[in-house]
Length: 314
Image 1: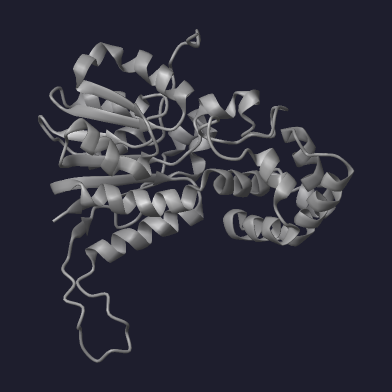
Image 2: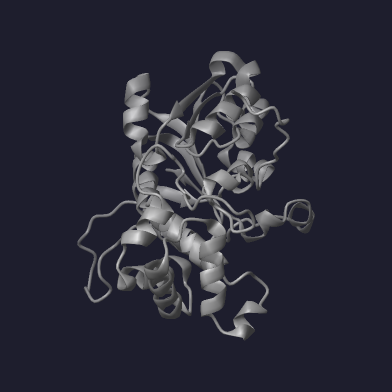
């Protein structure tokens, strides 16, 4: 059954992303995280002859995107897949080269506002966090089986959590008493584990833990590394890769990838001369990341941490 709520979602940095992707008459743009279809809709409106391939792991989001984009007919193709598998998606469609590849790495409002998905501690529900609930291990199952040291490493590496060891120990002690199976249960464990001063901070102390576990459950950073390379390799000359990230780990991966593609040498600095024969593959279009305006942040506080970077094939 389709969701009866109106589709009025405005995606983060919509106009900026469309501008950087640029005009591609009769071209093909891949939206690798199509979500509710907001960016795809803006691309289709901006260029009347462009075709958009929308990819997403989330069946519910694809359903909503399909409703939103139905009026564009065969200019839109929606595929349930992981964007890192863009090669197989395009091969199945008989498409060799594309003119743009967009990634919006944020969690959609549809996911955050559904308690049954378990992405947010604002709503109590099953501790799931999977982008594709039909595959992989849920957050609750991962917490139940991961070693305490692994939990601490994930919180430190993916959440940049200063109290990772304390929180991991508290999780281990709590799960020995009873399974941690809901978002509220996990949030309470985290809040109790950190100093009182940390609980009085600007953000909820459970924020970084939820981010880290979500990244681990969905293998998000490996997917980004693989997706950037696979997507870039399918771009036609002057094709554009644009990425919207929401935390420093993602942004560093994107920045490093663009710098690599824009470099004319990747030799170790200790070598006296270049021996790699590297050629410049891309021109970086955003010397600094594009960020939301104050007006956009006021209208959508979730946009405040967004950063948009883009590069063009040369």
